[in-house]
Length: 245
Image 1 (spheres, rainbow, N blue to C red):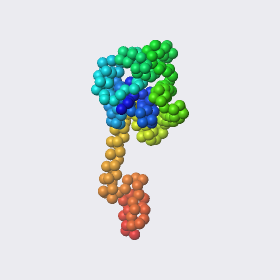
Image 2: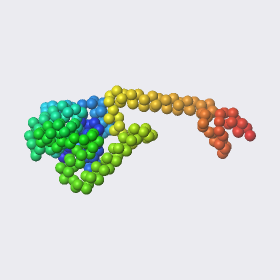
Image 3: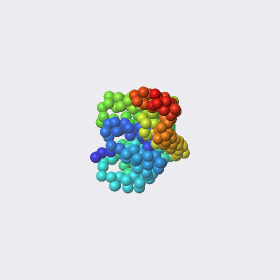
Image 4: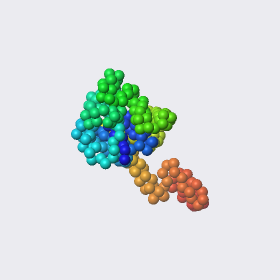
């Protein structure tokens, strides 16, 4: 079946992937961050480690795939990588009719360079680039304009809502944003994992402490016992006095 190839799975690539998923469009992605690829795979996402700027890597991948590649979205980290990947694809698919390519440009000069490769190039911030690239891609695939506009509005709302939760540290934002860890650098990602592991270990210790106190007949501070239909606050002295009355 048909699929879209995403070269780069950072913020822009992931946002485009979410838009495609919302429309039940299959995609596969390349990224050079091994940590990001591993974590994406653990989430069940079709992300592969590979250098998308090398024509032989792209050709080898597509030769092994039984599916039909219909479009490519390029959202790599640097201008050099983006231009190199675009030119590599154009050596395989010489014209836009052979293969539509949608690219995020870093500035107007870069955008004009990409246009010379017959690519649809957009130059905005990362979030808006994702929305516009996704919208242009879906339009090229034949989706109705009103559907695309509605999806862009929904995705924009979700993206900025998640970013605000992350900025202000609302509880539960990590659970509602499972891709958050994919955005981090390796150093920050390691720090987040260490923090989460320390928290988990602390919870285990607290749980063991509570269990030990309960086995001794003493509820921890802040806990209550229910004794013969009555709720008794405090430690073992409260329990024994209640039982004796």
